[in-house]
Every structure is written in structure tokens, then in C-alpha cells.
Length: 405
Image (cartoon, rainbow, N blue to C red; front, side):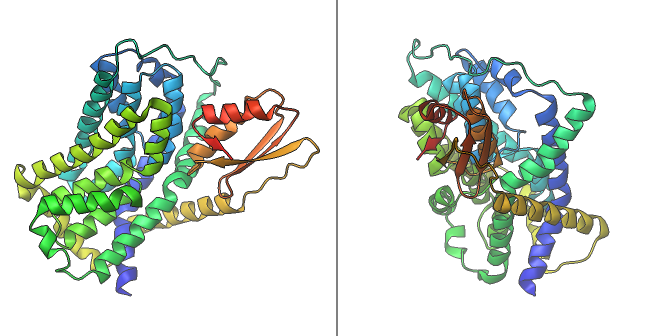
């Protein structure tokens, strides 16, 4: 019962802000074309890097979801430095996670978190730019020549709602649920003095969190309740920030893909900027900023053991739960109904969310001869109908940043 109460409290605290974030994210997606971003991120110097970091901070894309977006931006003209900056800043935060951070960790964390993402992304991007020779950056051929689909105002509103409350929920829903469950388990079952030794040595605790966070990977929103639970068990606010930064931004899949698309040197700088930036800013919080700034969030979290019914947050929680259930049903029950003598099936490697699924489907649809395509996220298979070249299809999928078995 205590576990259930803890889970309900965290859910009720986060759900209104998460739903608001989903709405804003959908509006971003529908009203601001992605190609507009890419046009401002070409060239060398620090300005494209700063623009990329600033664009990435409010976008609520998880680490796997940001990869196809960044690759598309790169192929539409964005520099390696700007692409790396975007890859560092985007997964760490977003409008949804900023709002949820305010609700659970307080205003100080809600401000520090996007600032930390911006700083690490800027310096990581600048480092990538300086590591390459002046003539290394060549013009990137634009992959798509067709115009953007023009929608009416009603169409854009419909697209924004679908993206925010269907596609995006499907993208981060699993990580959000995992984060909530892990947080509730930590809150209830981890003894209060478990982190007492590490709590006295912030640097040691930060290194331990880095080691655990990178392979664990959790989305920006799902990391919030885990960070709160760890703080309640004695870890410092700076250590919580390390988890909030490294957990969403750094994972092995991202490193591998970045190494292949932009070079191993860029991938190493990408990972190092996150680790060094997270630990450095965590130490700043613990030793230079007033501890009183972070006390409110810790006091709020104590109530996680006791759930009290409140109408509006409970309604928001109910809506969020329904959206999550619907996304899981769509993800695991979808199947291809394509049957034809000209049908081929491909196994796609690297798809982790609906963003990846959409990117693969779009790349396959552009192959000459393809008349219909169905990409199943749960099985990782793409069923393609039409008289097409397998070599061209494989090249198109790899061009989008994925592999074909």
C-alpha cells in the first residue's frame, strides 16, 4: 500500500505539467517546420552551435528520438558542431520535463536544468568544431527536394494534438512509467541511511551515478522522480543533477550512431562533454550555490509517502494513464496487413521510439517503386510492397541513420 501511495503522489504531482508540455511540444512540431531549424545551423563558428543548443533545450525529444532528427538536420546542411550541440542539449530537457521538474524538484532545479543543458551543449559543439580542420566541413546535400506539406490552421492544430498526445506519449511513455516505478521502489524500499556514505562525498556519488546512468538510460521526464527519490535517501542536489543530465543524454546507442555518422572524434567529445559538464555543474550546485534553493523540493518530496486526493491533478493523472495505455496498445498490437507477391520484409536495427519508426517509414516511402510500407516498432520489421530495389531501400534506411539486417 505504501508503494502504491508513493506512486500515486508522484504521478499526481507530475501529470498536469506533463500534459501541458505535450501540448506545447505538439504546437512546436506543427507550426515550426524542421527545415527552418536546419537553415540556421549551417556554417562554422559558435553562432550555429549556440542556436542549435537553444533550439534543442525546449524540444521534448528523448535520446533515441533526437537521433533521426539530428541526422536529418545534418543532411539538410547543419554542421557537425551544431548537430553535436543539438544532440547534447535536446535529450536533457524539454518543455514537458522543465514543467515536471518544477512540480517535483522546485523552481531552482527547473532553472538550473535547462541552463546546464545549454552550457554543456555549447561547449561540446564548440569543441567538435575546433577539433576538425577548416576544410573538413563540406556542404551537405539536401536529401529532400519536395516542399513541405501545407496544412490549414485546423490541420495544424489536429497535427499538433496528434503529435503531442499520441506520438510523443508513445515516444517517452515507456521510460516515464519506468522512471515512476523505479522512484517509488527507491522511496519505499531503500533504507534512509543507504546513501549516507556517498552523501558525504558528492564527487564519489556523482561518478557512481554516471556509471549507472549511462547504460540505464531514462528519458528527461522519467529521470525526475528517480532524482527526487535519490535526494530523499541522502544524495546531494548536485548528484541529482548529474542523473538528470547524464541519464537522458548519454547512452551507448547514441554514441555508436554518432560515431558512424559524424566520426569517432565527435562521438567522444559528445560523451565527454556530458560527463564532464554534469559533474562540474553538479559540484557547482553542491559547493557554490545556496543549499536553501534546493530545500523546498526535498521537503515536498517527503509527502510522497502519503497520497491525498485532489480533483484536478487526479483527472490529469487519469488522462495521462489512458494516453499511456493507448500508446502501449498501439505499439504492441499494430501489425502489417500488406500481402502481395511483390512484398519484402526487412529487419531494421536501431528503432527505439515512434520518432525512429516515422523516420524509417519516410525513408522507405521515398524509394522508387515502393507503393506501401508498414513499419512495426515492437518487432523491428518493415514490410514493403512494390517493385523496388533492395539495395536502394537499404541505402535509404542507412541514410536515415538506421541499419538493416
